[in-house]
Amino acid sequence: MNTYLLVNVFGVIVFMAIAFLLSKDRKNINWRSVLVVLVLNLFLAFFLTNFSWGRDIVKGAAQGFQWLINVSYTGIAFAFPDWVHVKQMNFFTAALLPILMIVPMFDILTYFGILPFCIKWIGRGMAFITGQPKFESFFAVEMMFLGNTEAMAVSSVQLKRISPERVLTIAMMSMSCITAAMVGAYAQMVPGEYVLTAIPLNILNAIIITNLLNPVKVTKAEDVIYKIGSPADDKQIAEEVVEDKPGKPAKEPFFSFLGDSILGAGKLILIIVANVIAFVALAALISKLLGLINPWLSLGHILGVIMFPFAWLMGLDVNHAFQFAQYMGTKLVTNEFVVMGEIAPKINNVHVFSHHFQAELTVFLTSFANISTVGMIIGCLKGIVDRKKNDMISKNILYLFLSGILVSLMSAGIVGIFVW
Image (cartoon, rainbow, N blue to C red; front, top):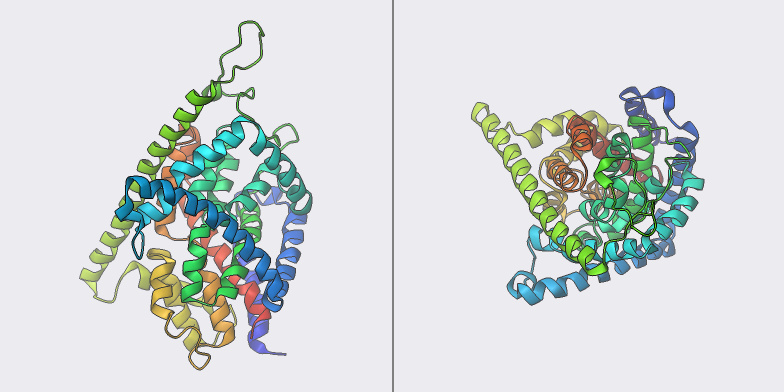
């Protein structure tokens, strides 16, 4: 048998073992869920790497979300045409301003009970398969193409009511999101079939890794889907009482609710962009200070060295593993586009990169797991949940980062088993 294949399989086991060893509560790990989702993961990886029509299904879903994002660009272009009608939109326009349409749209669906209904039944189906609570199961599906900040923003009703530990799980899962708007851009630079394969695998691996790192027991009473005007247990969500119907929460007039939703989305964007700028700038400052000691030193290079053993565990020879690790370090400190732009001219050349290397590197890059995403998640949650829940996230920043890395490693490693 291929020695590198054995190393690759062993590597996937090691990635899960790391999550287990660093778990916050090993006794409460749901092993049934872990094993079921792992089997589903392996099946999907085989299916998506060997059958093109499976990838067509994922592509169709991505195009549906892309249509939604494109509609939001119409509104942005009305106010700022020179921001949209350009060759390449900036991060603020492409990733954040769509929140101004997407959040109110999903809030409207929540107001009329449509989104809670979808969460309840889709979540129930996913929960049956994965063994996870209904909201976490639905969020896993929702974040496949909607993106981390958008998915959390449209789930604000649930996030305000669930426990801080469950909010931490959602934050950790959010490290592995992408947005539908990015799928086409990725596919222009790296092999599109592996981009589409990575999307569902990241979601399944996010369930596995968060289950291992942050297992949370959710009782049947807690596993509920809230609607606008649902009774709440905490003071933050306290509702007024209708005078002629004592005990029944009042429902805010629709247009008042919609106005609050739009203003909330605008505030959320400002909070997110402030955190992203700060995190990226601080990371750059650290790299500059390290460069004063030695020109080679930077956060990217240091992370590249740290990631070398994990790259080797994906079934690569030493030379390719070191190169792979440097790409990993660069991606984690900057973003996936930096690496994709660098490798685009040569990634499809099998004389430079083997099919195995192509598949694993593409899958590893297909997520938002990097330092700036931590800033986005923190900023987004600051605009949604209370201080207690924000403190929980702030105390577990390393767990967010670790979750994103391990999910990317798991997805890349599992795809690597089937592509040589």
